[in-house]
Length: 367
Ligand SMILES: Cc1ncc(COP(=O)(O)O)c(C=O)c1O
Image 1 (cartoon, rainbow, N blue to C red):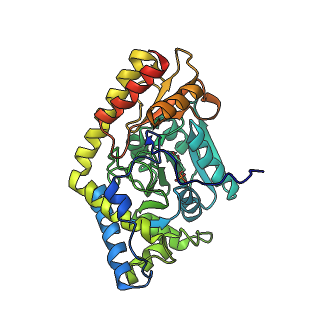
Image 2 (image 1 turned 90 degrees about the vertical axis):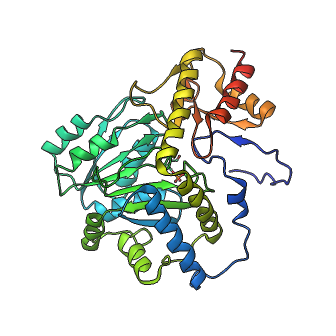
């Protein structure tokens, strides 16, 4: 049992290079400090319709968008409940894709995994082979495997799934959407979701999902659709009232509004390019001093998983960089905790700000 460790008022400010939460602009933080208003007031309709429509514009999609008060995990559950009657195919290659499969199993679905070694990417041909022999309600895949820094070829996988019109395609894009552009409709993605604390660079607390018309229609027939994350309930409420079905985290929506304006000003093309530059810089640095963990050609645009080829003490380095430089990055995930470490280059970071971290690591690890 954890004991109470009194929260204090004097923590030093740290710059976040985590794979989320990440840095949030000051004006976005300040946007939360408004007197409260009611979730059925006209002002709420203005706020919610603004953030939903701005999100569609930013993502470049005509699909419907749901913004729910929840972390992204909510959409693992609700997309499964809404779109999977019996069985689901999930390529697993790290902690988060394994968890997506596990969530579906806990909801009573039959899950077939295509298992890859950690660090490898899911391959479209394997998905095709499985779809040729099996009959799946949905394929669920993680676009950016945060535990290994792998960017799965979701576009190609989507094109394969699209050959099977009765199979829905569910994409967890939690650690990359907003920093790695994907054409949602072009690749037949029925549900794609993220959390606000990642590449959207907002405070945590909201989850965002873009839903295709086919997925909405499918959910109407579903016996076991989610109540809280039911596409129909969320989207019909939006259509009728421009609001959410239950009381949302209004302060975070105020921050969302502010940040989404910044994202629209930058545009998804420029934002994607900036993330590409950060990823290239970080990979080059990693190759010079260590190694890059993911399979070549499938490296993430928002999180670099560095292979600890020098055998530095990762936990001590993370701690020392935090103490000496007030910068926080991540050790490796789970079993690869000491074999790797991870740098989140997402949201509002730039090559210059990432360089400040890599300089600090060089200093602390004596590279
Ligand atoms: C790929 C992926 N999926 C799901 C999650 C869970 O997201 P949340 O903590 O917002 O529920 C994370 C969190 O890091 C993630 O990286």
